[in-house]
Length: 173
Image 1 (cartoon, rainbow, N blue to C red):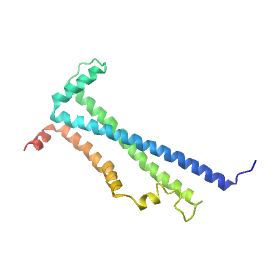
Image 2: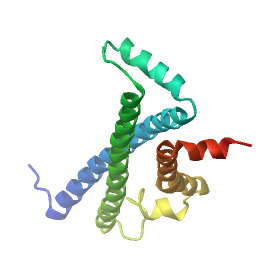
Image 3: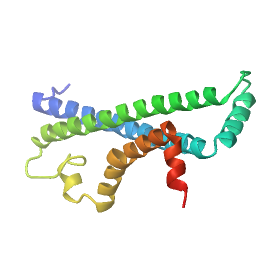
Image 4: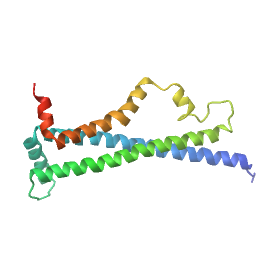
């Protein structure tokens, strides 16, 4: 059996670890995207409840009863339920966004280590140098959407849910 030299073994371990880390990163992005779409639906219900309270309460009451949950359901229960669901999903969404940012930093460090074995090349720069050299304008827009616009949408929805009369004032022409 041929012995593997230490640098070669280190490179193999780094490559394997990079692959595993990148796979975890992709799965985390998929979870973030699913939460994003779920939050859009929750925010739509949350905001719609301000303008069409009775309709939303009726629809949600029927849905809850259809699930086999027998409760005396009223406006305050549904409103509280929507608040709690929004809170829970928002917290988890932002935790995952922070996790993704940390993963990017870690992947960049791994790429730097791997590139020590491939000097003067762009090997192992998928998430680092190569990615940012030709960063598309659309990706900038998406980054802005995830980090600024979407959190603002959540805050605006909460504001109008807390002060529904303000929304009614803005909707009058």
